[in-house]
Length: 158
Image (cartoon, helix red, strand yellow):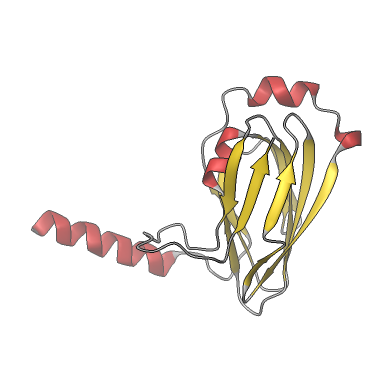
């Protein structure tokens, strides 16, 4: 019982310390084939994907991507508060070349998502490696979903 109370307290304190007013990256795991894929990527062929974050979620809500193709995701927060882009499966199973936000660029980050401050933007360069159906969610990273939310983006890599 004491241990369970300690875990709940740690989660509560962590949630309070969460930087909700900043634009930040969240660490994740890199795809095993990321280095090999990124070495061969032709960024001159990259397609730009504009994604708006709003009070109602993401726009667009459906994206079709090609396997082994480079993409530049540009996230724009159009809301009056910090918005979250949680995409753990997508970023873990595909190759992230770089992430640019708040005036800085991180090369080859292993990430699970990011926060974008109100009015802010971020750019993430991704080479798709694995076919599948992925999603971007707007739920906090510490959130344990009890129901499915509808504010995300569905990405299909074919």
